[in-house]
Image 1 (cartoon, one colour):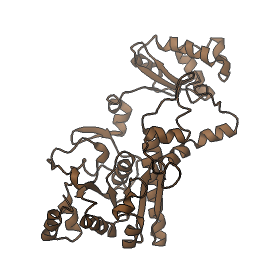
Image 2 (cartoon, helix red, strand yellow; image 1 turned 30 degrees about the horizontal axis):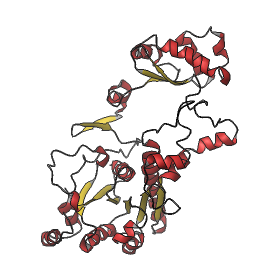
Image 3 (cartoon, helix red, strand yellow; image 1 turned 90 degrees about the vertical axis):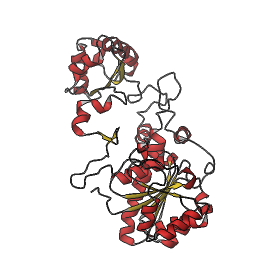
Length: 381
């Protein structure tokens, strides 16, 4: 049983960071009930779960939140829950009747987690946006990219997932710990722009220390340095090098046969970085990725092959650690982090929308006639 076993969470269905937060909580053992829109319920074979593994680990009920009885159904769930998470624009949950005041009136100990891009306040709060916009405003997008090029969006990892879903999960668990001590819940305002800004803390420190060049692609960690970059190999694949410390850098030179080339001796001479990178580019193109793996794996170069999504689950290190698992025929990342005693696990594959409506409402104490009446009224599906 995971470390959050025994906790109950209501997830009002959304996209991206909200579901990722719910997945993290479910992976850690929480009983997460996903409230899907009644209109999204299409049936579906429980033995053929959907492929969207971001929705793994939860049960689903279908509810019409524009129906007063549907709203009452969610509030009944809230009465027995420890937390609720939602990802509407500011004010939408309040207009639906499931905002923090309504929910905490039913359950004062409830932690109410809110996931937005811009936050619950501020000039941008009510405008649309996506990951790229949030990390742009946070100052996290501008530094990413190569010298002379435009900023490069780092997938949607920094805003949606690192600065969004993970921050919300952290905030919810923090608030749950506090609620256990005080008996009172609170609202968690998790904004992706805030979270992305927090992820940039080290670079603000580097700037204050005078060791970060504002010109993109000229610093040690942003592809400026020859000893911290990716290099193409003879077969068109890539390897990653992170030989920052002098002893690791010495290993890099030894294994590439460059120890005796005098230009490489001044590792931190930034004026030489472009020239040294060209030389390393030539060297790495002389062998295939697998050949470089034979030479560098198991050494202190700080090396790893650059693997594709399909390749990563097959690498021996990931296989031994069980970093990826297969559930319902789909290979996917295993829960993280690891625990020595309360082992986290994927509780179930993704559910079809509304798949567990009767089961969940039965646990609330509603009998078959009442559930049938709610369905007839269009409050649930």
